[in-house]
Image (cartoon, rainbow, N blue to C red; front, top):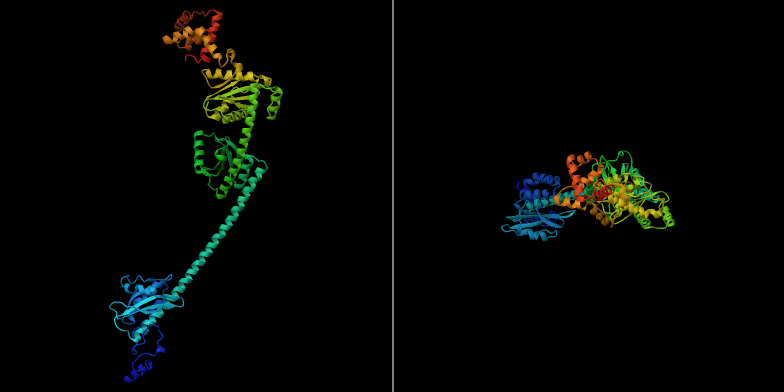
Length: 590
């Protein structure tokens, strides 16, 4: 039995000291070849294959290193002091071992470049930093120590465990690289698909933008106005399209569903809406409409809108709307410029007509504007308390005149607008239209008598002013007054003539006015009502809410104080004219 054991030792140990021949070791370059051959432990025949399977079954490098460190003690009197994995070229310690446990070897291992070297750990007689190398390069280090000198067999088992760990790490690293490559390939494919989709979307968007641009450019080139622009936008988007002016009134509509009648705007709410859209900028959804302001050079000329109650508009629709708004801004700005030029030329002609000009020049210039001075003309003056007499108001008055079928030439003065109009105006149409346009009724309009030739226009202008002044000083200040309807007041003119009127009133009513002022009575008012009622006692008493006997007493006092006899025809006429002037032209009791 002993011989058999000797023969076994002899096969593995050719010399009497029991050391393995150098050619048979080869398991790991740092494993010592010292010592006689020991019988393999139970792990070599039973547990090492299981450890190998466990190492190769996992694809997690940290788990492989942990398994190797856990089984170091099973192959000999070893302790795993630390384990390191190579991460982006840096040695990172395994989290299984705390930083304090491997502090003695940490710096040494971090400086290694793939070599196996001895390490010194206090309390340990033997220590090695074993490189975990594989086909993919250096994967890490396993730092192992022992309190005693390991045997040859223990060296062999440790070397086997190191090789298995390195091989498992190589497989895991290769698998990780393969997985990373697959993920990168998937990412690149997804990125390519995204780029392709973007390219397709870009081509589609570019094509749509080109179609929008070509459609609106064709409209502009053909001289189409806002109706053509709204029609083109409706054709491009399929939505009903509308244009409103600065005040919310409909200018044009393309597509189905047009309200009839179109609702009147609320001025305050419409202004608030314009300010809100201007603050936000671009296209803004308000209720069932997608709205874009028509605003060249910052001035709002109107609103372009799509009717979209289901909120179906996409980015292509928004692009078409905003592009159309730009085209419409150019169109309306051009129209505004033409209107301003036309208004200026009209103004120059009307100024000359009001000042007096020769017939031939007047006829030729008015014909160029499409205005026929050969027809009967009326001069109309318009004054609105809430509106300054600027170009904007002059344009408003001109539009209102056109709306009521009154062709006219327009100019303005410091406090009123002047029209030279063909044909007699309607009694109230212009006033009512301007009331709607301005939103206020506080306007006064004076209309002259008819004029047959241009050289009569200056006098007709003075008549219109006189009619407006009579209306402005009357109890009903706002409305339209025709010079032909003034009657007696046609002889009462504006301007400096009021001093003569005041003198006339003082002459006939001065005593009564002074008496009323001292005693807080109303004798002049009673006399005026007496004349307005045609001298009828009952009607006069009722109008001033007094008894008939009281009226007789007041009339007697009027005779006594004024010194004028109401039964005298001349006195009665002068007193009646004086009371009318006092009440209408001079402001009454004030």
